[in-house]
Each structure stands twice: as C-alpha cells, then as structure tokens.
Length: 77
Image (tube, rainbow, N blue to C red):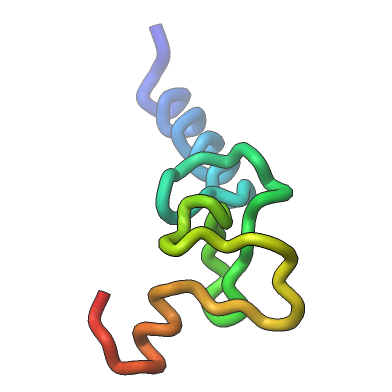
C-alpha cells in the first residue's frame, strides 16, 4: 500500500510532466505537435485544427490566441 507521501510524489511528478508538455488549450491533447501553435503573448498552445476557424498553412511571425486577441479588443470570451 502506498503512503500518502508516495501518492503525493506521484501526483506531483505527473503534474510536472503536464506542465512541461505542450497541451492544446481546447482539446487537452498533446498529440500532433507539428500542428500546434504557441501564442506569442501568453504561451498557450493550440492545435491549428482545434481553432475556429481552423488555421491552415504556416504562420509567419507572431500569432496570438483567441483569448489574447479578445483582451486586446476588449471582448470577453
């Protein structure tokens, strides 16, 4: 049987791995890293195909996620 300390260490390790991984903000998946975009403002990660509308092609330069665009536009999401 695991002690409380062992369980907490396992949970902490799991959470640290999640923080290190690129997790899509919309679907919470880590697959298809080549299809992910990272926001230039907040560093949140999104699959191009999870966004509405879907993003196609290669993004050149800065890209901002819907939340950051809304903040700049004073629109609540």
